[in-house]
Amino acid sequence: MPIQGAAFAYLTPSPLNGTITISGFPFRPKPILHAYSGRGGTVNASGRANHRRGFGFSIDDVGFPSYGIAAQSQDAQNPTNCDGGLRDDAPVSAISTAGAYDGICALDAVNADGFRMKSLQAFASQIEVSHLALGDTSIISFKVGTFNEPAAAGTPTLVNTGQNLAANGGAIFILGEPSSGAIPTLVGDVRQSFGFGTVIKGIVKQAVWAGGSNNGVSPAQTLGYCRRGEIAAYFDTAVTGLNSRMALDSYASNGFNFFMNEILSTTRRYQYLSIEGGIWDIVFFLTALNTNPYNLTGLFQNPKAAVILSGNAPEDAADTPHDHDKCSIGFWDSLTNQEAAQVQARDGGATSVISTVLRRDRIYANCDSGGTLTALLNADSTLSDGIRVSQNVADDAANFGAALFCADNLKIPSLIPAM
Image (tube, rainbow, N blue to C red):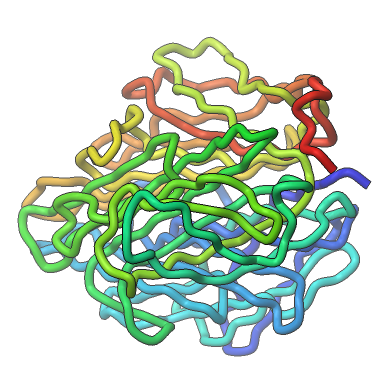
């Protein structure tokens, strides 16, 4: 059967060893993506609030291998109070304003029509987690793992996943938090990166988002970075600029090749989810300065699911971040199943300004400098080669976004990966 996706949300179970089952899918999930702003509850909400942002992935394999990055930034603080960390035992975790993990949620079971999550550590307060589960037989294999920066920039380096991506196509997701040392990590400062890429008949497409907030400073020092052409990026310790940038180079018969545009240390790690099989493509777009609907379309017939990523800012030039740490991530599988999480950490104020958004009916969200919800995107039509989106109000700029789609097949047979 062709690839299928399911975009839903769940509340982390609060007590230790508590579980929640998400079911009703028309397939058995294989890889699962998770993302959250830190808001709880099951209704749309936005405004000033501490953020507890995170990204993770998990797979249906022995032990349910998973990786996740988490962060917290406290609102209305002088100086700033923020932390970040990386885990290899769970895709979802929360960090308290005291700089300690105060909730860990792991994949515990996969069923014919869904999956179950279990709290490895009790949550001080529940978090609403958006997710995209993918499945069916066109996904040949799926792997998660970690690799380090190479010693030199500019040279393609193989990540051996044991998958024939060159023949069968697929998609790569990269997440990371640059602290070294034993995992799980937990450090002051927020420095997160999330990106995805694919190769279709030799054409590499990829996008990266990175966000950072420096801990214990006044005025607040925060930066963001989002662009095509790269798949991962790390900020320096003081969050004054980037010092690691990575690009997907090509698919191989046993994995994927990447190269570094900029490196700092071979102790820095990156975590990957590699999916072999399926038809994938990335559509780059700009949000509108009006409310006219517009299309996110590409090569596909019958799009099945999408991940939508934006830094809530115009596209950055290479190695040139922008002020403010903002991020919107959305998941889509149909007109009725759309999820979005958004976080903002403002730069420059004597007192920190942090805001979050949770939407169960949109694929993109933005807010103004005071944390008030502004622009929202929702998919209002499924087209033969993508989706049409509607925007409630003009955005604050023509902000850059990237949408990774998976689909049944391609309109152009010559672009189907060789089998």
